[in-house]
Length: 158
Image (tube, rainbow, N blue to C red; front, side, top):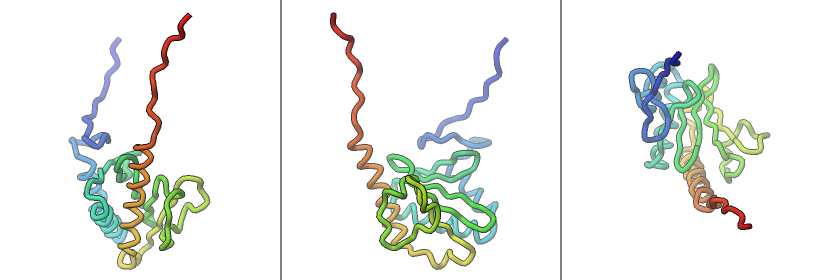
C-alpha cells in the first residue's frame, strides 16, 4: 500500500511555500494586512528597517506562521501577539546592544528580543535597530567563515 505524500515547492531561501505557492514575502505581506492594527504597522515598520539594514536579507516563513529574516543564518523572527510585536534575535546574547534595545528574553543564554507595544512604532530607534541587524549579519557571516570544515574519516590502515 502506497502512502499519499504531499509536496511543497521550496523557495530560494529554503523555506517552504504556503498555500497556492505563496512566497514567504507574500505570506508576510498577508500577515501584515490580516493584523490590520498597530501590530501590522509595527511589523511592517521593522520589516522595512531590516531590509534597509541588509538589502541581501532573505525572508522566510517558518513554524506555521512566523516571519523570519536570515543572512548566512537566522537574524531574527517577527512574532505577533495580542499586546506585543516581538523581534527575537537568534544570537542576541552575543550581540553588543549599546543603545539598550533588547528589553525581553534577557535571561537566556542565546536569544534576546525587543518587545514593541502599541504606540512604540513611532519611537523605534531606527539607527540602533539597523546597527543591531548589521551586527547580527556580521556575526552570522563570521561564524560561517570560521566554522571548521568537516573532513571525511579515512579508513584505518592495518
